[in-house]
Length: 551
Image 1: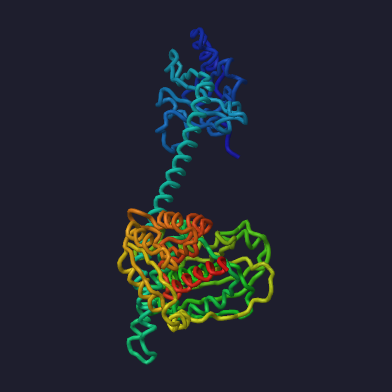
Image 2: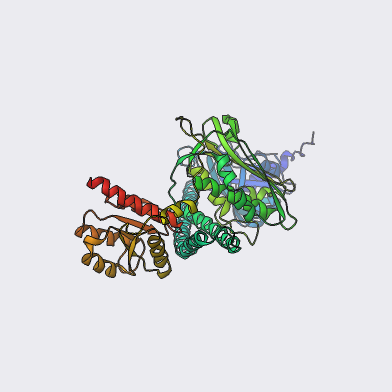
């Protein structure tokens, strides 16, 4: 135990008291600290009314014994509170108590006192302080300061939300423009593959172009996801089959010095999602892992399976910690890279955040949005030097009849069937201000047996429609056009021909506008870029649906 401070002699205390007695009006609010740092006098108004020092107590020990903080001067730094600091400042405000305000916000649990240096008293060595209760004023200031802190936090959140909203709008516009550019690439390479014989050496080059365009399409899909403009089309799918169909594409996207190892369980329960979103998740995780392995390269493991998660398991998830206990289907991507630093672990899903200068910074953000959108969960295991494992978990599809593992025919097969149809299937008006996209759609439809009329703008299209309403079987409209939008053009055509059969094509994903147009009679929506067979199928469906209504 430490030694007790020496007690001041009683005659010294009496001398100080007699000197302070000469200060009428303020003597009951005076604290005098002697040369040795011992308290020699405490005024009657202070003694017992606050957590005041007592006579004979060490002043610095009192300052350190309770919840006492120097709040003015504000530039006092981190040095410990002491007698010398108070004496040097001449005027100080001490906050004594717990929180800055009581339960009712009136400062009832906190007191503020102003300590003003009076200077020496006669021949007595030491420092005299005049102590004034300034709680009322400082409690108000504390409430104002807290209100200002809240205001700043709210302002920062609003500004952050506005920035994200602006970034989302920009991302959506960029995705739309890229989709318009990709449309003739994807469509024409599809037509080229259809025309090329199986033994042609050009098929390999055309396939490489198609794969590159598919990767660009995946990127625009990420942008639309981030912009909140990609509406999922849920269906029952097998996560294992989805990943299996992507193996060649994943290997093409990964760096050349990385090896992909697949462990896909054949009996994983089905999930109800947009299959393209599962592919997007896997693609982003593989690309991210491949980038993490550079420059040395390494192995990436891709697994699928099912697992039962308890509430404790979910609580440890980075995303979906509030999910329901049960069985989840999962896809997992693990690498043996450098891992993620603890400081970056919580930021890896932030928009545009990346630890690599060459990275896009949207991949994991898109993964997070997909997981949240389907009410799933995400586990992240990583440590510096120990690699990274990301497991994405999807809730199972609702119980239904047994799902059949039926593989869809390839786009080339369906397009070949469409192109094998005899001519004379009807006349289609194609409207698009982009010449390349318009020419592609016209070529595709002509190849499928349709006659085609073309228009580069809304006014021109309306003129053709007015003159040839009876001979037009359907209309294909671009959604975003100058002068007159596709939606406005569709409404104008409906005034002349209420039963007009129309398909809308757009670089944007179908959203509220698409659903509204569908309610008003739009027959179909095709998102750019599209495979040729998608456009033919949409037109066929529009025409057959209208024939069913007429019948």
